Amino acid sequence: MYRLLADYPPDRLHIIERRVAPGPERLSCQYESLSTPWRRFEGSRFNRWKRSLRAFGLVPPVQLSRISGRLGGFSPELVLSVMQHAAYYDTAWRFAKSRGIPLVVIVHDVNEQFEPVLPIAVAAMRRRDGKFYRFASKRLCVSPQMERLCAELYDVGGDVMYPNRSEELMPRPIEASAKLRSHGRLTVGFVGNPNYGYGDELLRLLPAFRSSCARIILFGHPPAGACRPLLDAADCVDFRGFRPAMEAWRAVQEECDAVILPYPNPAGRMERLYRHHFPSKLTEYLGLGMPVIVTGPEYCAGVSWASRWPDSALVWSGSDPKELGVELARLRDQAERRVALAKGALTSGNAEFDPNRIKEEFLRHLLDASAS
Image (cartoon, rainbow, N blue to C red; front, side):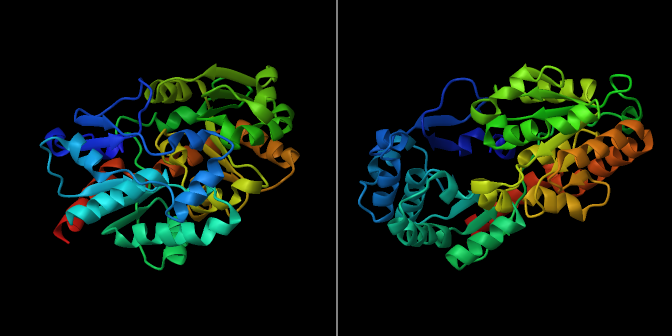
């Protein structure tokens, strides 16, 4: 959202959101925080009950007068909302409806995965979400798979808008991939949160890195839970901690030979999410001017996308880490292959994820919604 709206006139934006911790970069427009009724239950063992009661309309809604009070003299002509956190997108829908103005919704994830309800409330939740989704003048889904899922759930189509990578991200020279950063050793970078299943898969794939004498440089939050042992694999894992995005990308370009997107295989409880989301990490990987490795089940959105573009990535959907070890060794030993993959990644990424084009499409959607 920050990238999409970075050039938008700040006097024509007014953001109302949940309170967030200091740190994230913000736009220069007015921000207001909004708490929602029964918020304390969301982090308790009663969270499913709270969301289930909301599905049946039994949780008190946000009073729209609170929204009006936070606007001051600002008079919106359109409401933009993300389909994440039901109490907030419910409020966006009710406010737009009360003002008779268009609603534009962005759908990045399968919200049912993040806000699960009791089985008896699933149908009610989908009916309620369907009313919100159908009311929207524009429905911007992060992938073709997400658009099809929402069409099946809510009986109306939408548009596909892939995630927008940073315009500041510049590729390194393609020829740089011909030379390994460490002589005789392949260095693979991972940037992001390892605690959404990716870290578990990196842990499972460690035998592949060991057998091919490769190593991983991991930029992100510390691995926790089941993937915590990554921190103990010092022979092939170098943990660098969290860095701001552009700082992390520059470090990857300087120190790594390739980057990896490791979907869990099998995906287990994350399967539905991985089938329909689109990893913003992949759009940025493809802008680095480096070889990209994508592993995981064929049904994962990132795997299926890369499989459609020849040489956009080294795609591996096997289950035996030894097989991936062979592929990593080939990539280590074949400079021409690394250069071809770097070129293919950049070509496919620019074709589908050009940040300026995505921003222009987004603004056109806003104008179309306003005209409606």
